[in-house]
Length: 386
Image (cartoon, rainbow, N blue to C red; front, side, top):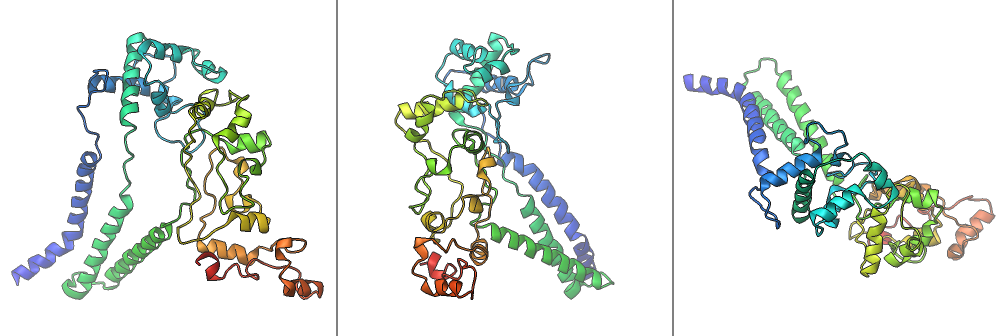
């Protein structure tokens, strides 16, 4: 009996012990699991201590009595949510990796372009300190930025909920330590219900990338090009009316304007120089694709833009107001089906729909006043999953 009593007593305290143990393990292990490897020495023969010192200068931790802004206040290390027109630390590192210290100092103290020149007016740093910054940037160019640590908070919560509901279930069936039975029942229902919600949310996210907003190799702003400079969408994405995909403009097409325009009002010359260099080297800009449907889904821009006469904003949102393009809609099947049910097609006067004689007769007879995409078979499974 004493053994059973001891087990029952220990079981009541078990969830608390497991919680403390899990917290300590996650706290102690995570720094080691994602820490950077040390001991590297870059090509110039500088040690890790010198690289770290250069990083401190870049981050503004040194010198202690500086009057100018820190480098990182403009030249970011992690991708921001809003457009930062200054070149990133990685961009600077790659561009100036091949320069010696004297050339690097000249570039820092007298940057090209009115925008960068204005931001560096009060910049003052000693030769030795700037050399350490160059060492850090060279190291960054070779090794790249540190990988972002993955968030495991939801996984820990999910596991802890599993422990709690297991304790509640076993107490109800075996141990029966809690006298008020509705307490473990409520705990079980609450923990299990929240787990189901978490599973549903994570499952829904599979294959979707709503609000995806990646950093691009060149800071291209649709707001600047479309709204401020009045460039039509079809000038760059000219295949949208006749092809399955809306093309990404080639470097040659961009150079139609930038053969003359070599300095931006916000970004200076740094970003446009990337385009010019790519053009001179006859290579394409590796833009990051944002809108991506699963491989088992057929979608045609020609069908929607060319035949259906849909406006780009109906699917992509107000891209003309975006500095950094993001995926506006979730592009789920339900979202597409709802759009097909609710959207009236440009039916009358559209040569594409001349063959739908039944609907034309019904409109003339006043039986119907509009035709939706679903009416003409847009929601048939084989339309997208042939």
